[in-house]
Amino acid sequence: MLMTTFFVLDCASQGVIRGFFGVSPQPNVLAEALANTNTAEASGFVMEQRWPIFKGLAWAICLMLLGWQGRKVWAEAPKRPYSRPAFWGMAALMTFTVLLHFNPSMLGAQPFLRWGVLFSSHAEAQKEIQAFENQRKALWRQHAAWDAHLVDQRPHTVVVFIGESDNRLNWHLLGYPRDTTQPLQEAFEKLPGQVTLFSNATSQQAFTLPSLKLALTPATSEQPDLWKTTPDITFMAKEAGFYTRWLSNQPSNDGWFAAIARDADEKVFINNGNWRDSSSVDRDLVKPLRKMLSQAARPYELIVIHLLGQHFHYELRCPKGIGPFSGVDDDPVMQDMKRAGRKDSIRQSRNEYDNAVYCGAQANAEMLQAISELRNDRKISVLYFSDHGQEVGHNRNFSGHSEQDASGYSIPMWLWNYQPGQKPQKIHIETKKFPLEYADQAMQHLLGIHSKWYEKKSDPLSAAFNAEAAH
Ligand SMILES: [Zn+2]
Image (cartoon, rainbow, N blue to C red; front, top):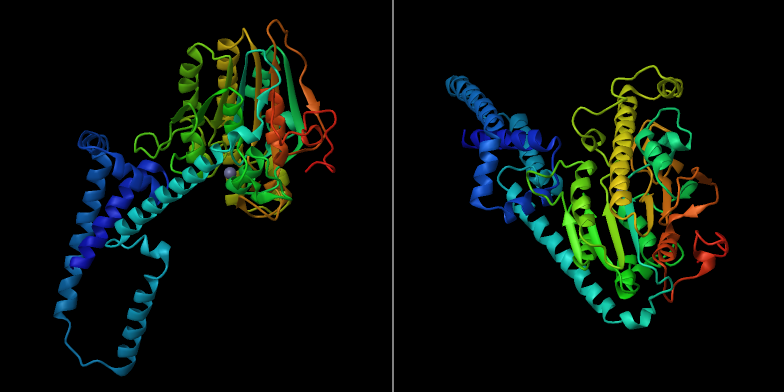
């Protein structure tokens, strides 16, 4: 009965947590929230969640009563000696129960041991960040040897949007039948200066970390380990005299990115594992970005914005009440998917994914608007790319990151260049290849800096770029 009570109370608390996050949260998020909270915030959370907590408790009491009812049946049953099969059956069950404890994810669901698992994974994440930080400190000591220097002395602002799980095959601007990118298209048409859309950009990896290690540092597919011994683009910019800012809607305890952000002159995480903010959408980045931009501009400034983009769970990527493709079941996209034999659940995922693409377009359009408003007296470059693509029933009945499908690597990318006095120009569609592993070269181009790693033939924005000769 003690066990039943614990399990039931644990179920109730998990129910409240799931209800709050919409999904089962990463253990790190919980551990960090618990480690960093104070009494006032904790009691604020309890007050805010009093109804779900009340509901959870009510369920727990019902289940416990049911358990106590069962006790009667069990206590009143006539006692019989153990039979041999029953003994072995019981032994097998007990062994299975013990073995379950060797599986970390099962252990993480064990009501007595869950919290230990949670805090040890938190401690591990902290240790990982510390290791990355030490590595970066050693790297910074060599900064003079990077030869990172300005080649364009005009004051300017560079903004880099790092997207997440965004697939260009789902962009209306690049030919997808559904109008998923309307807010961005409107923004592009109004912006003064030149917008370039890359219709042939690909990532070399299908997961965030391996892909961005290639994109943000001189590392390439041929030399993937170079990221450990070379500076990332924010470090290079800093060395060349840039004021650097990191604005993120991704978790603040994510190893390498956390370490990069800590070296920036300013960093803002709106999704820092805090209870209240953990279901933040990218549109919530608009406000802190406006605040950053309302400060006087430094001569050379770089802002990196790390989006949550179209990462699953897709339905959490939209502000409440926005979802133009929810419930659509008979448009050309759905008809195509039905013809290809896609399951209902995958088609529903596609609708949610397309909603997330739409909401991403909306958030990015609003941020572009803020940048163009608050920095219109200087040269601006804004680059957007996704870290990798996503398979959502494009090739098979599957929704998620995919190493085996082309959709896992097809990414959208765009660039907005502006100089004071320019008028809006027609969107230019660039069909040349843009392998994301050379994004660091393109960013040096946009920042107006050269380092010892910069080469025109590896710079996709240079006329001399040669995808075959680049390395
Ligand atoms: Zn990713």
